Length: 258
Image (tube, rainbow, N blue to C red; front, side, top):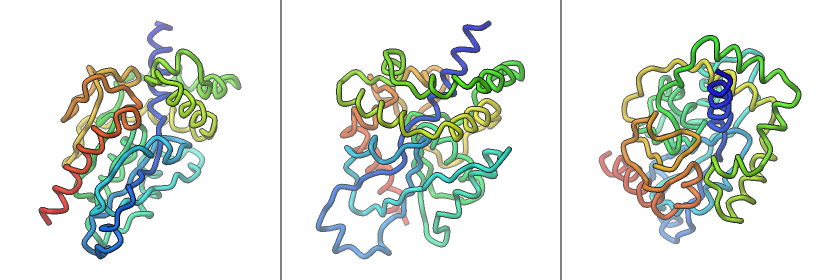
């Protein structure tokens, strides 16, 4: 039983990880092209991080990439209410798409219920809730009350490196910095909310990219639209060229159809 609780906590903890912005490669065509002709694409990260995991992406200059900024959750705030507040950063008067990485994918699904994006793309994330019983949900809340929980979840060590797929000095350094910058209170709030996330059906117009070697969110519990062989939870950085190619194809295809 305790093994199951530990595994559930670990999965939920690091589902909250990732980064939040995407970097489009500089290109003279991007300067010359009118902004009105570009597709607005909003990237949403995991908790407490920034664009560092996305820095190796090379995105098409036809995309107007923007970044959703995390805000501090209110006391007892639900995921749905929080997503509604974040959606205010989106210009809904123009066509737009969402890209959510890890926990950002969960938020993207919730925003889609109220903001109507043309497409939502998930990377290393989940399209439906984790099937946890009420008992496990209560146990997670109890364990997170410990003052030692935040330092444990934020520590970079052999276990976290393994589960994130950080198998190079560069990836280990990156992961350590991002975990260090994660806000502890925000992390605990997200874990409690994630343990009770009850979405049973994936949203419409969703496209899910997932790796076969993701140990945080095993591919056997998700149903991705495209599979990255050998891709771990950090594949957006470790296999950025492959992810960039897929993103550029999907995001610009929607743009061209308009």
